[in-house]
Length: 238
Image (cartoon, rainbow, N blue to C red):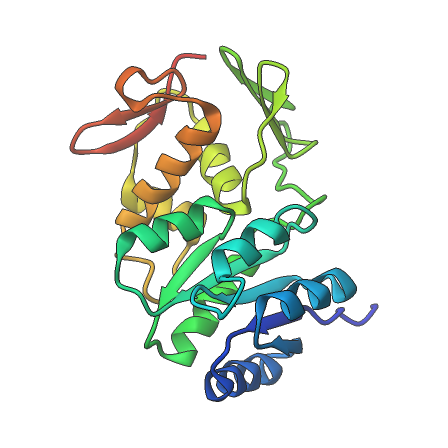
């Protein structure tokens, strides 16, 4: 049996003490780790090393984490976990909206952070979409086409760029059209049992909001993802 290839991580934060702690935990968990204290260095390292995971601070000096995340998404589909010391929800929404897969607020437990990372890494990798024997190659909902083998989503003729979490959320909802999924069911299916996530149902609402925005799906007149008030979400008629 061939040895398992190490996963690589890039830790980006301007607090050296925090970087050392996160780096230490990732090294102990078997990652190859590189670090950066600013956005420009982080992007250069990401282009060079093509990391599987980027742990990215929102409040970087100069080019902030939002800009770094936006730039990363132009050439990489790595997992991005954003760190923020700001309790302001708007910052979190902006960070997720530019392509972050998840966020953790400071201060945090390194063990909880590692659990969150492990959950992200259980999601399908680019080029290796999750497949189920006998599942439909394409799922069609009006103008929306979800192409499982290609791991692509289109609205009309336009390709819709989604983060891993957004794609997995859409894949889960579309797997059983007209069936209502509760927020907790979606957490269990997409985020599984990461520490700090299991009870954070608001995280589902955030990602559904971003997903709708990218699909051009007005929640007041939804064509694809319908809200079932007091219960959760379901896909619209196929």
